Length: 240
Image (cartoon, rainbow, N blue to C red; front, side, top):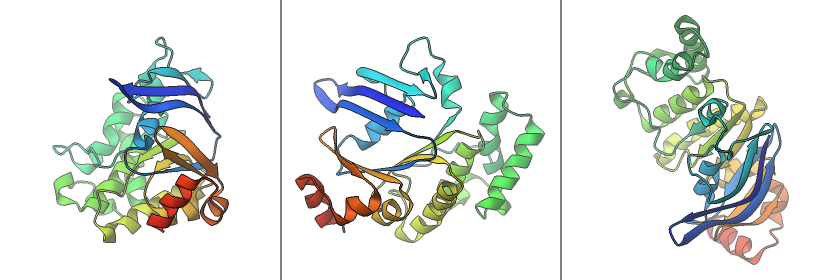
């Protein structure tokens, strides 16, 4: 579904990603782990060109999105993105936050988008919040709404950039539960996270990044039980 070849990204003189090649197949749940500053979020943000690669190519479902002629806005409609800090529109109701993009892009009419919003809100247990505003919600509720907003575009892949790191610990579970449901339904997912339990339970593959490189990758069981790289072993000894 996503094919990354020789991806590098620099900010000025600082090389953040160094010649990464990776393939993400349909239905995979790829969890990206690593210390702060390892390039995880930059790698994720390059996948939908929120960050423009310095070198290399990214292909999504056969279309090279790094080609300047590619219609990146059209492609992004198929790639749901959930951020660390929700990024909801504070002046719009929850329903409007969810329906704005599908209606604006012509994906569906307002009535259809409203029906879908109701269905999705019911699914995450927040149907009664449709007419509330973001500042009336807890952090966990906002993040569940952010996931719903991305799902309203009926994406082919969901990208999660540390979706629980800004939450109080007791709210983390409710967000991870929604993500687990998505995984169970077969959604292709790339998740940058520090939640080791989620990586172990939900991931189909774990990537470990440090210094702008993917140092190791494996199934969750092999990754956690038998890490091969010395840097991976050191990281896991500190977080488990």
